[in-house]
Length: 116
Image 1 (tube, rainbow, N blue to C red):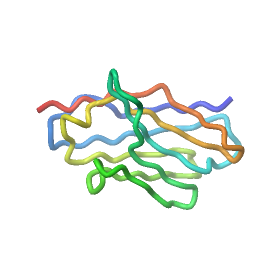
Image 2: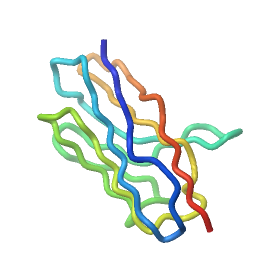
Image 3: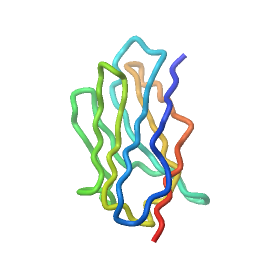
């Protein structure tokens, strides 16, 4: 059974940095894609960044130049380095992974709060 476990969330002042980690377990194969989404109460979950198994990345316009996604396939772990954080980045951040059969998995989420 595949599990994704996020860590690294917390409270930070505006302009600060956080690094999120997502450790995947239960799969013998490399995920095709891993990514990060975020959600605030009352709003839809939105895409933040994705990375393919080959390292191709995609970022939402709102985080370009501030966030960096990376992955370690040997460790089945994805990372999200978040710099120059803004209060509007406050959300629950979810890790996402898609396997070879296009099955999607989600982590439980980690809270990121940016104070002004």
